Image (cartoon, rainbow, N blue to C red; front, side, top):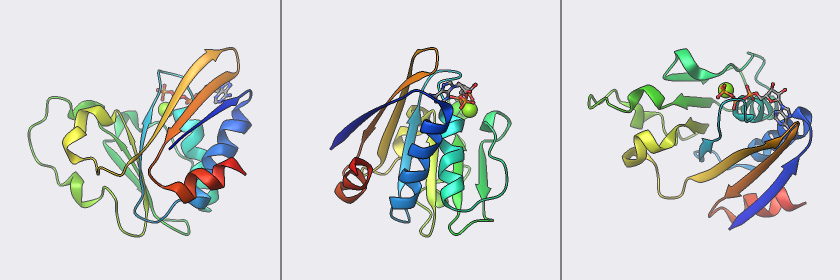
Length: 149
Ligand SMILES: Nc1ncnc2c1ncn2[C@@H]1O[C@H](COP(=O)(O)OP(=O)(O)OP(=O)(O)O)[C@@H](O)[C@H]1O
Ligand SMILES: [Mg+2]
Protein backbone atom coordinates (compact mmCIF):
# COMPACT_ATOMS: atom_id res chain seq x y z
CA UNK A 1 0.00 0.00 0.00
CA UNK A 2 1.09 3.51 -0.77
CA UNK A 3 0.07 6.84 0.68
CA UNK A 4 1.24 10.27 -0.32
CA UNK A 5 1.41 13.49 1.67
CA UNK A 6 2.46 17.04 0.94
CA UNK A 7 3.70 19.07 3.88
CA UNK A 8 4.13 22.83 3.83
CA UNK A 9 5.96 23.38 7.09
CA UNK A 10 8.58 21.65 9.23
CA UNK A 11 5.93 21.11 11.90
CA UNK A 12 3.74 19.15 9.46
CA UNK A 13 6.60 16.79 8.64
CA UNK A 14 7.21 16.35 12.36
CA UNK A 15 3.52 15.59 12.92
CA UNK A 16 3.62 12.96 10.22
CA UNK A 17 6.67 11.36 11.87
CA UNK A 18 4.81 11.49 15.16
CA UNK A 19 1.82 9.72 13.67
CA UNK A 20 4.00 7.07 12.04
CA UNK A 21 5.77 6.16 15.29
CA UNK A 22 2.60 6.30 17.35
CA UNK A 23 0.95 3.75 15.07
CA UNK A 24 3.89 1.53 14.14
CA UNK A 25 4.25 -1.99 15.48
CA UNK A 26 7.33 -2.72 17.54
CA UNK A 27 10.00 -4.27 15.36
CA UNK A 28 9.05 -2.15 12.36
CA UNK A 29 11.79 -1.03 10.00
CA UNK A 30 11.61 2.24 8.06
CA UNK A 31 13.82 2.97 5.07
CA UNK A 32 14.11 6.72 4.83
CA UNK A 33 15.29 8.49 1.68
CA UNK A 34 15.58 12.11 0.60
CA UNK A 35 18.26 14.55 -0.50
CA UNK A 36 20.26 16.83 1.79
CA UNK A 37 17.85 19.09 3.65
CA UNK A 38 14.80 17.16 2.48
CA UNK A 39 13.53 16.73 6.03
CA UNK A 40 14.69 13.25 7.08
CA UNK A 41 15.92 14.34 10.50
CA UNK A 42 12.80 16.45 10.97
CA UNK A 43 10.62 13.40 10.40
CA UNK A 44 12.71 11.26 12.77
CA UNK A 45 12.38 14.01 15.40
CA UNK A 46 8.62 13.67 15.12
CA UNK A 47 8.94 9.92 15.59
CA UNK A 48 11.12 10.46 18.67
CA UNK A 49 8.56 12.86 20.07
CA UNK A 50 5.84 10.22 19.78
CA UNK A 51 8.02 7.85 21.79
CA UNK A 52 8.60 10.53 24.41
CA UNK A 53 12.33 10.55 23.70
CA UNK A 54 13.89 13.67 25.21
CA UNK A 55 17.34 13.39 23.60
CA UNK A 56 17.55 15.67 20.58
CA UNK A 57 17.80 13.62 17.40
CA UNK A 58 20.64 14.77 15.13
CA UNK A 59 21.52 13.85 11.58
CA UNK A 60 23.47 10.64 12.01
CA UNK A 61 26.37 11.88 9.83
CA UNK A 62 29.04 10.99 12.37
CA UNK A 63 27.40 7.85 13.69
CA UNK A 64 26.65 4.68 11.87
CA UNK A 65 24.03 3.94 14.45
CA UNK A 66 22.49 5.76 17.38
CA UNK A 67 19.96 4.16 19.69
CA UNK A 68 17.64 6.32 21.76
CA UNK A 69 16.62 4.32 24.80
CA UNK A 70 15.09 7.10 26.86
CA UNK A 71 11.54 6.82 25.53
CA UNK A 72 8.61 4.44 25.71
CA UNK A 73 10.21 2.25 23.02
CA UNK A 74 13.77 2.23 21.67
CA UNK A 75 14.41 4.15 18.48
CA UNK A 76 17.31 2.82 16.41
CA UNK A 77 18.61 5.35 13.88
CA UNK A 78 21.03 3.98 11.31
CA UNK A 79 22.98 5.83 8.61
CA UNK A 80 24.30 3.26 6.19
CA UNK A 81 26.13 5.78 4.00
CA UNK A 82 29.61 4.92 5.17
CA UNK A 83 28.90 1.21 5.02
CA UNK A 84 28.78 1.35 1.24
CA UNK A 85 32.17 -0.23 0.74
CA UNK A 86 32.39 -2.12 4.00
CA UNK A 87 32.38 -5.86 3.80
CA UNK A 88 32.99 -6.36 7.49
CA UNK A 89 30.05 -7.66 9.45
CA UNK A 90 29.57 -5.19 12.28
CA UNK A 91 26.50 -6.96 13.63
CA UNK A 92 24.02 -4.33 12.53
CA UNK A 93 21.50 -7.04 11.80
CA UNK A 94 21.17 -7.57 15.56
CA UNK A 95 19.59 -4.13 15.84
CA UNK A 96 17.53 -3.91 12.68
CA UNK A 97 13.95 -4.78 13.57
CA UNK A 98 14.97 -4.72 17.24
CA UNK A 99 12.01 -6.47 18.77
CA UNK A 100 10.66 -3.77 21.08
CA UNK A 101 11.80 -0.81 19.01
CA UNK A 102 11.44 1.08 15.77
CA UNK A 103 14.34 1.17 13.33
CA UNK A 104 14.90 4.01 10.87
CA UNK A 105 17.55 3.54 8.19
CA UNK A 106 18.98 6.32 6.06
CA UNK A 107 20.79 5.32 2.84
CA UNK A 108 19.13 1.88 3.04
CA UNK A 109 20.35 0.95 -0.44
CA UNK A 110 23.83 0.43 1.01
CA UNK A 111 22.67 -2.36 3.28
CA UNK A 112 20.02 -3.80 1.01
CA UNK A 113 20.88 -7.35 1.98
CA UNK A 114 20.14 -6.63 5.65
CA UNK A 115 16.71 -5.10 5.11
CA UNK A 116 13.65 -7.10 6.10
CA UNK A 117 11.26 -7.75 3.22
CA UNK A 118 8.44 -6.05 5.09
CA UNK A 119 10.26 -2.75 5.61
CA UNK A 120 8.23 0.42 5.17
CA UNK A 121 9.74 3.01 2.85
CA UNK A 122 9.46 6.75 3.40
CA UNK A 123 10.60 8.91 0.50
CA UNK A 124 10.87 12.66 0.99
CA UNK A 125 11.21 15.02 -1.97
CA UNK A 126 11.83 18.74 -1.72
CA UNK A 127 9.27 20.42 -3.98
CA UNK A 128 10.70 23.89 -3.31
CA UNK A 129 10.43 26.41 -0.47
CA UNK A 130 8.77 24.69 2.48
CA UNK A 131 6.89 22.09 0.46
CA UNK A 132 7.82 18.43 0.74
CA UNK A 133 6.27 15.37 -0.85
CA UNK A 134 6.36 12.33 1.40
CA UNK A 135 5.51 8.93 -0.05
CA UNK A 136 5.06 6.00 2.30
CA UNK A 137 4.92 2.44 1.03
CA UNK A 138 4.13 -0.34 3.48
CA UNK A 139 2.67 -3.80 3.80
CA UNK A 140 1.37 -2.72 7.21
CA UNK A 141 -2.25 -2.00 6.36
CA UNK A 142 -3.03 -0.85 9.88
CA UNK A 143 -0.27 1.73 9.72
CA UNK A 144 -1.41 3.10 6.37
CA UNK A 145 -5.01 3.27 7.57
CA UNK A 146 -3.98 5.13 10.70
CA UNK A 147 -2.14 7.70 8.56
CA UNK A 148 -5.22 8.18 6.45
CA UNK A 149 -7.26 9.40 9.41
N1 LIG B 1 7.80 20.92 5.03
C1 LIG B 1 9.01 20.78 5.57
N2 LIG B 1 9.35 19.62 6.16
C2 LIG B 1 10.60 19.43 6.68
N3 LIG B 1 11.57 20.36 6.66
C3 LIG B 1 11.28 21.55 6.10
C4 LIG B 1 10.01 21.80 5.54
N4 LIG B 1 10.01 23.06 5.05
C5 LIG B 1 11.22 23.56 5.28
N5 LIG B 1 12.00 22.67 5.91
C6 LIG B 1 13.40 22.90 6.27
O1 LIG B 1 14.18 21.94 5.59
C7 LIG B 1 15.25 21.52 6.40
C8 LIG B 1 15.15 20.01 6.67
O2 LIG B 1 16.28 19.64 7.40
P1 LIG B 1 16.57 18.16 7.91
O3 LIG B 1 17.77 18.29 8.77
O4 LIG B 1 15.35 17.56 8.49
O5 LIG B 1 16.92 17.45 6.54
P2 LIG B 1 17.70 16.09 6.30
O6 LIG B 1 16.98 15.40 5.20
O7 LIG B 1 17.89 15.37 7.57
O8 LIG B 1 19.11 16.62 5.74
P3 LIG B 1 20.58 15.96 5.84
O9 LIG B 1 20.64 14.93 4.74
O10 LIG B 1 21.49 17.11 5.55
O11 LIG B 1 20.77 15.39 7.21
C9 LIG B 1 15.18 22.34 7.69
O12 LIG B 1 15.97 23.47 7.55
C10 LIG B 1 13.71 22.71 7.74
O13 LIG B 1 13.48 23.90 8.46
MG1 LIG C 1 19.48 14.62 8.55
